[in-house]
Length: 441
Image (cartoon, rainbow, N blue to C red; front, side, top):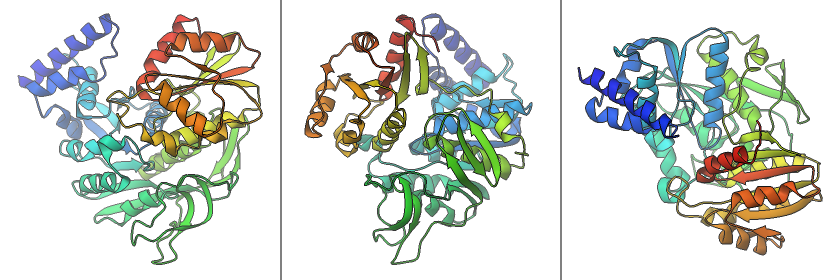
């Protein structure tokens, strides 16, 4: 009876929230859990083929949703927290919204994105078959602390699930270390060739997670990702099970996974990692991937994943939450050789992290390429990001707290495209502005 009451309450709150324009991705589950704390445990018995969880600093929403989309394309019923509500309350919301009014739920798979800090809590309720870990970067230092703290949290979660299959980014030494944990079976994916220019880049996981010495690289892709090795203890990039070669970063992107040619209309080198992670996880759960490229044709990215809005010229919205994410967004912007205006919005609300010192770890100087037309700063911390550009010797053409003004002014210039790079709590308000101004996805 407690479960039924929780489901009815959650469904009522979902309807009420949507009536007033809320996404209702988390709060219904928060209140439902007060009535039925074990609500999420139902996934262990109602999911027939297995639970797949995805965590990591960057790319987990895209990877998780790609996974669900690929499995749905095969005809499976999939439970997925597609809006990215990745704490226990968000997962509970997903569960109750998928249940019928009698509290019944059946599915073939569950694909769940989980916040790294919440993995030990969630694993008290569910026992996944496969866990994908995309990468580990410094993120929200006032919440997570340094990377080694996040690593320890994930290790505690892994210890709670016997015989867990791990699909790990083999180019990230901080992910590879999890394959050394007890009672796990690790599988590794990676990009096995030098693709990007070997320019100086901020490496966050510079030191060997085994012995603490500084690592060396035969080549690297970005941040600490690449063909790494420790000259002191021998810890190194492992043998790769799901191997990317033949990368072409044109439009569309082209590459091979284990010799299978892919042609994908996604922007950003980092999306190759998301795609090969999905390919690897599907193989690990026993699904055929001969038709992998075609499975993904119907996938639509969540908002802010290089999402294009149509005006008199395209406006491209990109979510970047931390130094590694911003560096990759800047790299993607710079591959576009059109004349462009760039808007950068920085907030410091609770979901962003109050500490914005990470702005000094972003390679913002690289945004000043020959195709940059104007640069606009906005957001709650508009003066902090503007000061950061001042110290990078980059001129800011406009500072404003009004995103609508920022976009409107950029639409008047002679550029060919506008890029809007935002951190988390600026994302949905920017989406609303773009829609109000008449932009179409």
